[in-house]
Image (cartoon, rainbow, N blue to C red; front, side):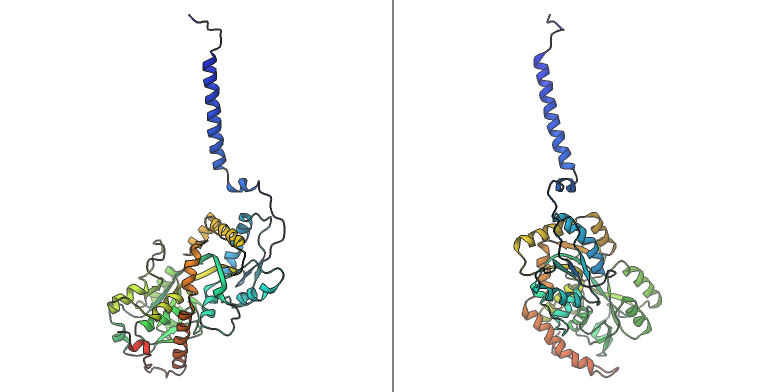
Amino acid sequence: MPRTDQPDHSSSARLFSRRLLLSGVWGGAVSALLPRHAARSATPLNTQPLSPLIVGGTSESICGQWAALLAPVLAEEMHHADPFPLRLTTGWDGVTGGNLFDIQQEQPTPPSGLIVPGSGLIAALTGDPRVHYDAQRWLPVFMSCQPTVTIGKISLHRSFAGFLQGRPLRVAVSAISGPELPTLVALDLLGMHPLPAPGYGTPDAAIAALKAGTVDVIQLPFDEEYEERMASLQDDEPNAQPLFSNVLPASVSARLRLPPDFTTIFKQERKRLPTGRLYDVWKTAASAASLKAGLMLPNLSAPDLVARFRHAAQAAASQPALRAHAREQNQILIAGLACSALYADMMPDLDRILALRRWLSVNIPRWRDAPAGRPLPPTATQQNTD
């Protein structure tokens, strides 16, 4: 019989080894579960003052809201002690902010970036004389996008051309080359006769004009108020229906219950898929109009700085607060390298930009001189639609 008052050395060794193993596993698990900011605390914070982010809008604008959310998160991810300062600008379409961003690139300490809406891109695409920046030279690292929907008093079960019989189709727009551009191009592709009616700069103004019969078609953002606006509109105008969404096929999350996209509707009406340079123009206009806020860097930014911004933007896009804000407003977040492919549609090669400007140069005189209530002569595009 072994003596029980003597220690069992082999048992003690096994117990000690097991404790070491368990402590190692537990320590690894704890470190893996620690918040990221705890791990970052080991990295010294950069206390140098940051140059500002220029915002293409006021603090109440969509760009202003995104700037307030992004500034502290980006700075934290890039190990800065303080958030990026913001320089807000006036103007509804981001052109003022874009011009300021371009001018200040020559300063000893240029701005860190620009947060701009898609209307600033459309102004550049259309050759707006106010634009003094080259948006093709911007590098996007963060985007928040939201489709638009074209709405009118037209039944899609009837022929577009047969319903209108050449009568001009009055389209509410904020400006001839404003964010409603994809609706104008889409209707032209369908062989219709869009006639822009400028001066309707807000969804409520466009809805009121459609109710009053001043216009036939409007374009609304597919935002958090879309369903409520549509319900109110159809209470007064039951014939007002969503015609199509200005979005590329299969490019939007399924959680957004959008009306059929324009490409699908074109195929339904014309029995073929749309092709040609004008369809490319529509894709550019629709993509640019969908941008609610994009964080842009100068094209000549140092590669390591671009990489840091991309990483920080991806981390920001995964933050619960930013994701919740996007979800509440029916917006889709794109960050990092994925922005480049989408931006290629928003700001394409020169051939597509020139095609858009040629289309405008042909149509603007027709729109300006159109007699009230009289048919518009078809453009060369419409003559070749079928």
